[in-house]
Length: 253
Length: 330
Image (cartoon, rainbow over all chains, first blue to last red; front, side, top):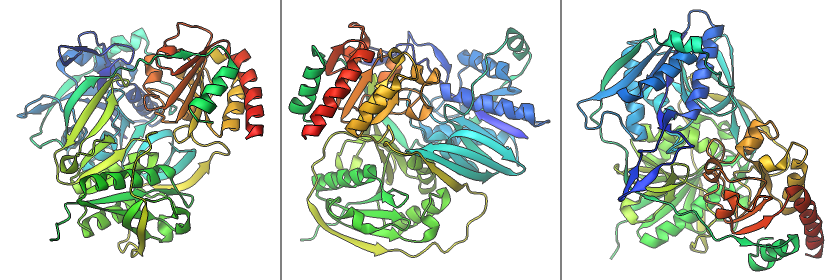
């Protein structure tokens, strides 16, 4: 089975994205693999371990400086990893969902030539911008079925049985190969990599795939400003007073 | 003189189990508000699946047509059938913008529609600046507000849930028009929903008007009974911090924050939650925030409107008793 995994890089959610002289300041940011992509990668590797002859290939718009993040993907168990780079265009890597999906679809189509991979795994969204658009867009662009935000996956023959959380419940969905699946937290528990796995990952390939990407984005970010979240907290002495403000002053109960 | 209509808005009214979602109804009314602002737009709706339309009486503001695809094949969500019905109508009626509430269904379907229709997909709060309408959205753990503008003539909006009450025109004339069933047969390759398992009881945390959430300070799975009781009394839902979910005290479906849900209740209780930035990312749109924590210096108090310093195990039982008394008098 051919399994592709798309991975993106995000600021570690614990690190501080700053604001300096009217611009976003990334100098104190630690770049890591997107949290949801870890579930995607883990699921791909578990499948590979179950289905003999499977190959897991990672695709990422990661700059050369972030090669270590792809090494981590290899240590988790991917067979090979590719940095995808845009040729010709302005930015080397797109920051907008449509161009990201388009670039990834071209990298995947080019790599697998005339045959699509059986499965493409993505995280359900990035933790920085959280638009949650790339996986389904990728499905549409590759002409593959897609299911977003899955929390369970079972394969019987040609049939994929997945579950996804909906408001107030769970949807059980059946879909056939090939498919794009995006991973929600709860799909699995990503493994910790051993030192041995990290050492072995050094022997694996981090390749470079160039794709042409001259299209216009669908959406442009026109501004960004820091949000002041601080409120002045009104401390109440006891439960009586709390109930009184909520019911009489706020009119909420 | 008759001015040409510039914008034709189409609102997707999502139903589950025959009930039109309040979040979709809210989007309809917000879009009516946007249309009233620019004075140059018409609003239509699309309803997929057999539903009793009487439930919408008095809920929808403004004038408009709602196209109803009643066929049984749309009773349950089907990505491809739904996409087709929506895209076909959008094209036939020469609409310019399509609006969705931010739901699991929308997130599954809208990105595919965006590619298919070559339409800009924007999620966030609509800024309502007429033709070039952009959106704003919290990014980087809700520590920044970013604005986005579309580059395409056609747009798809996923509007965040909001506690703000919108002004919209009073209930006017809504005409329901049935639309023909889908002609084409579908290929098998598309995902099919086989079963839906709905939880019993309280509303989903992402849709609840009041959320009572607990974190590490709850101390264990048993203490969440206090939050369940409080939520039940208030008609709200229980939420949890990442710590509480990772400890196995609560299911992931209840997690609020960076790797959980973003909530927008009118009233949010943070009980024994310290207020890590990843948690705050999920409550940026909440209305009134009440924090109950034994540590007066906990960061949660910096984002709370009301704070009560105390042990949740002592505060909550008292609050529950008072609430019962209070509700009895109502």
